[in-house]
Image (cartoon, rainbow, N blue to C red):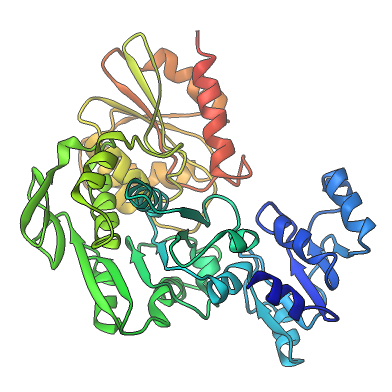
Length: 452
């Protein structure tokens, strides 16, 4: 499979846009098999010296710096998810007859085994990980990748028809995908990445693209409580299964104590080791996605052992009766709202970051309801404070402002009282101060660990 694909590129001119971590294995696969161009916004001095030397050794043509997209050559062009598929350089290349694709789209076309793919505004990484754990508990060889983990195309030859692939996909990846998975899961669709997408309609359509190419042999799993994802069910070509925290849906539901399958109790929700109602929903989505493939014993095993994914309501430390939690993944207001619902004790919330052009009105209302002290830093501090002060709820938290995350964490040491929780759940992306949410979360955890 992979060998045949690579052989088909022999003698062709191929361009890869983006030389980051996700495309590095792809570049290494291609650089000895075709005339390869690599386009990246970085300068040579910003490349890893070893990787740069490898590219030059194989005579890869580098197009670097601010004008890296001025012109894109190639018979085949691999788009990185961060570059829109309709930028002028790609539109011009398509007009010349170039095939514009991605590592993920090629992988879907070649994969020999069933694929379960997950997208959504919230919960997709946790849901993807639970699905992978359920399948592993059942004894399957599982490959987890996409927007989480390692690129999958280079591992294609390790797979066979009995393997299982679990893929997390972002809206950036989905915009121009031409394939759909056998099982598609959409956790929800709420405003997100509106600094990149041209409005909510485009963002929603990108999420729906996960289902667009399914057929009658496929399955989709949708959040019944989210009106947008529920409406997708009317357009699905295959079987539809829902999950719901609020009603008995066709599929999986929560009656306040039990996770139910088609209205019948399956397991007690308090058996799950991951906190919060949102994680009950994530677990139900995973059950619907693996229905018919995993036994009740495998389900119970995962419920008893799965403790969550790093940077997602991650317990970090207890100091003088104050518990610190890292929820750096919360890069949107709805993610932080889910985090806040996990705690019934006094909460000191650290929020703020890069502005993705999302409204904070509902977030402000919940902050008033559930937060005692709000610690703000980052580019969106003004917007969040305005949403909280403008909320209809007359109860307002104390609000403090700081220049950076380190000084905010250090201030929490003085402000938080025994019996309370310090929750780092920014409600914003990290790009004003950090390259990604992982580095932001690691910084928070180290700052907490360093508290005296």
